[in-house]
Image (cartoon, rainbow, N blue to C red; front, side, top):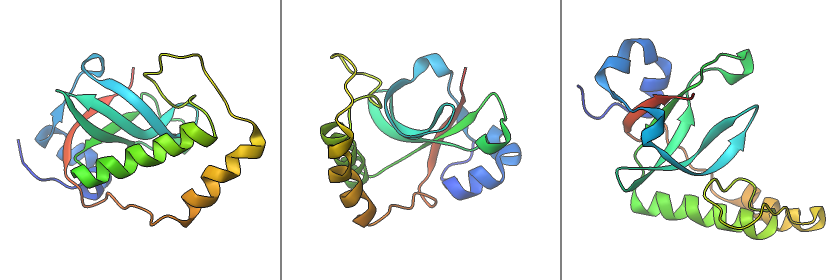
Length: 141
């Protein structure tokens, strides 16, 4: 298996590169939260082998392609903290409905509070993970 294939190359050449990156069975992954959703999760954070990673869809979800295929992307500690920070802010001002490990009841905050998250989220420096390395990939069941 090749090492150090970045996300943008993996996504654009999945059929060619999929044998160079480990495929992980879906049931070996622990999903923490998602950051985007369209008829299913599109990206978010998961745990595998006691480490946090970002997951992101690589199939074209707008075409209704199933099953969906995702890359597991390696983040730095600072990138993980950044993702977790924005997830905490989302839960604080919007709700916990994106938290896949929540112990408490599903909670969506009043619509009047949502802007407290989204206004700041829009101002943030947007992260680009295209050059981050792909750890593995999985197929959503």
